[in-house]
Amino acid sequence: METVLLTGGMGYIGSHTAVELLREGYDVIIADDLSNSSAEVLDSIEKITGIRPLFYQVNAADKEQMQPIFRDRAVSAVIHFAGYKAVGESVAKPLMYYRNNIDSALTVLELMAEHEVQRFIFSSSATVYGEHNVPPMTEDLPTGGITNPYGWTKYMIEQILRDAAKADQELSVVLLRYFNPIGADESGLIGEKPNGIPNNLMPYVAQVAAGIRDHLNVFGNDYPTPDGTGIRDYIHVTDLARGHVAALRYSRTHTGAETFNLGTGRGVSVLELIHAFEKANGIKIPYEIAPRRAGDIAEMYAAPDKAEKILHWRAEKTIEDCCRDTWRFQKKIADELRILRSH
Ligand code: UFG
Image 1 (cartoon, rainbow, N blue to C red):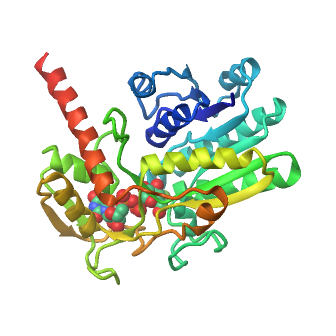
Image 2 (cartoon, rainbow, N blue to C red):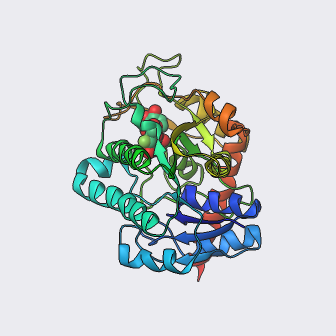
Image 3 (cartoon, protein in one colour):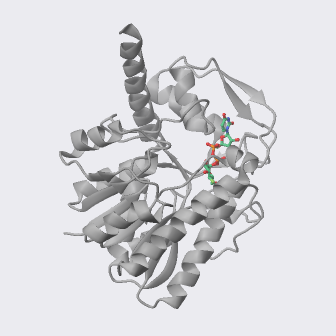
C-alpha cells in the first residue's frame, strides 16, 4: 500500500483529496496546523470513508515539526496543499505570503531529499496564466503577468520545482493548475468553510441562500463577455480530488516536472452560476451589480485535453451537481450553528 502525505490535508481541497485517496485504498497521512481548518474535518473523513487518517498538527514550514513524519513513516509521495490562499490578503501582507508559501514548499522538498521521497504533487493555480493570455489556457502558454502576491507564490514555487526536478533525475514533480473549485462531497459532511466574509463567488452565493448575507454583489457587468459578467471554469472539488489520484498514479512511473490543468474546459459566467444555483436548489439569490473587483480578469477557462490524454482523467460532474452539493453542505453548517446557538 502506498502512503501519501497531504500537507494542508484538512483544508477544502486537501480533505476531499484525502477522501478520494482513502476510497481508492491509499494510506493517508495528514499534516496541517489547523490555521484555516478545524479538527472536526478528521471525524468527517472517518465518517465518510470508515478510516481515520493519521494526523499531525504541524506547520509545513517548520522542519523540526515535520521531521518525525518523514523519520517514522514510510512516505511514498507528498501532495502539497499547505499554503495561504486569500488573494486580497496577499496584496495587504505580501511578505507573510512569500515567507509562508515558499518556506513550506522548500521545507517539504528538503525533507523529501533527506528521506529519499521522490514524488511531489503541487497545488498550483490557473492564476499563473496571468492577465495576458487568452483562454482556453494550454499548459505550454507563458506564465506571469500575475496581479497579486498569492499568485506569484504559485508561480515561484512552480519554478523552484522545475529546477529541483532538473537537478535530481529521480524526482517526479507534478504541477496541477486548478481552475475554480466549488461543490462538496456528496455526503454533505465536508466542504468549503471560509472564515468571515467569503472572497469567492460560490461560498458567497451559498451564504446568501442561507440568509447569512442579504445579497450578492456581482463584480462588474461590463466585461467583454456575452452577459458582461466574468467567466470562470468551475470544477467540482470531487473531480479535482480525483485528478490528484490520477496524478499520483502517473508519478509512479514518471520523472521530471510535468504540468496539468485541472479544469472542465467549460466557461460559466457569474450570472449563469447564480441562475444554476437558483434552479438546482429552488432558492432565489438576490444580487446587485457592483463595480469590477481590482485584479479580476474577464475570462479564464482550461484546455483540459492534456490531463485527459496523459492522466486519463477528466471532470465529470455538472454545474448542477456543484450547486446541489454546495447547498447540502451549507445547510449542514447552518444546522450546526443553530444547534450551537440553542444550547
Ligand atoms: N465574483 C462576484 N462576486 C463575489 C465574488 C466573486 O461577482 O462576491 C466574481 C468575480 O468577479 C469573478 C468570479 O465571480 O468573475 C469568480 O471569482 P472568485 O473569487 O470565486 O474566483 P477567482 O477566479 O477570482 O479566483 C480563483 C481563486 C484563486 C485563483 C484563481 C485562479 O480564488 O485562488 O481562481 O484563476 F488564483
